[in-house]
Amino acid sequence: MRTLTLALLAALPFAGACADDSSMADDTADVNCAVETADQYVVGLEKAGTVLDVQLMSALPAPPARGDNEWIIHVNTVAGAAPVSGATISVTPFMPKHQHGTPVDVKVDAMPSAGEYKLSPVNLWMPGVWETTIEMTSTSGTDSVVYRFCIPS
Image (cartoon, rainbow, N blue to C red; front, side, top):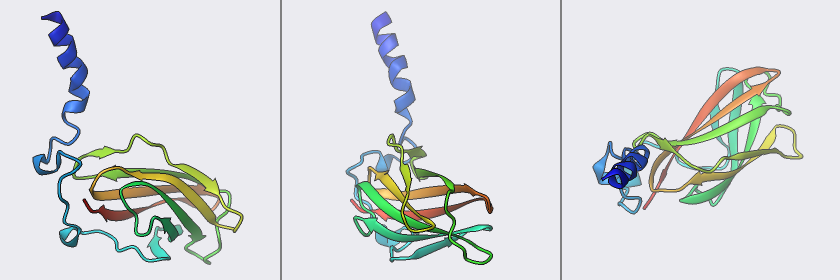
């Protein structure tokens, strides 16, 4: 009996990971991206914050897909549109419908071109809508933007 109780207690943290939507509890469930509200990928897809502006310059694969993705972003100031080099950037993929993120940390590397950064891997591990928040701190200020992509089944 004690072994069963310990096993049940150990499983509790994982029990609610996708419990809020039983139709999507399985990562193989069908997702109809045509009915979801999400960004449509295009090169240069821009998201404006209040101080900083981000453009998604490339995605591998394109459009973003299930699994590991690599994104190149370009960060500018909103006032003056000057490239922002030396920013501290954190990236958080999150699935709002399921209330979970991804177990893989996104590494951010500055690129040779001013204001460009490589984000890898952006791990979108299951079908559905993913909101990827990019938080930035620079001498120009602190800001964040959100890219919202639907990953089909």
